Length: 243
Image 1 (cartoon, rainbow, N blue to C red):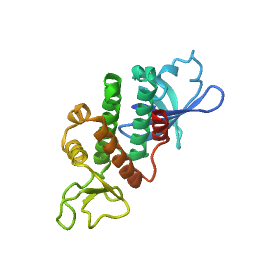
Image 2 (tube, helix red, strand yellow):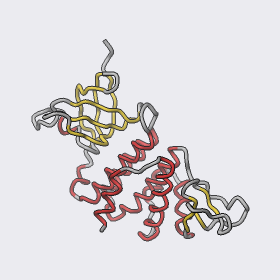
Image 3 (spheres, rainbow, N blue to C red):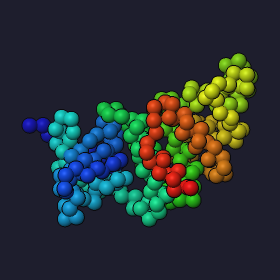
Image 4 (cartoon, rainbow, N blue to C red):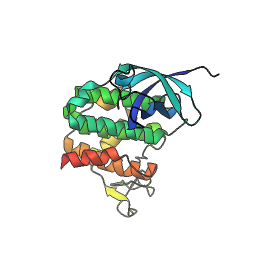
């Protein structure tokens, strides 16, 4: 019999599975995204119930069942409870977790992505007035960690790039712009460059105008959609809350 697996992870999703059970989607450093069958955890009397809610960072003990793991125990490390006191902050946190899971997939190392997610969730609890800035920083840094950072030099012809091609991540001039080229302001381009060159702490603590953050976020969303094929449903919920 295999030894139980001990692993830390962030709960990305907790779907109902039976009357008292949940199927967890968890992002881990060592194995990327894993699925965990958690029996009985919907009962408040279950000792593991507090550690398996979405966005909880927990210490798991698991049995390997082949296509999924089964939960032996879960000890809460950090719940990021303050996010649950603000519906918008919670929506951003869920989107971050979903997006990180999308970019990593299964059976992949995710050390950088986990650090980014945990630090971003922490910053959301402390700086709710900066949610849009944290969002654009998270998205751009995730591009870097996932291996498809934008190429921000001049257009291929040598001219100054004033458009950002969201399909390739390249800067292009007016002459070489295509159907996926989006106008980018000097301020937004500076944010792209800053995040790409800054360390994680600097990335999550810098300050810009919300209008610039919104522009960067829209460009980053389009770029990520082209790279990943789709974006998490959590983004749609954020947009609905903004209406």
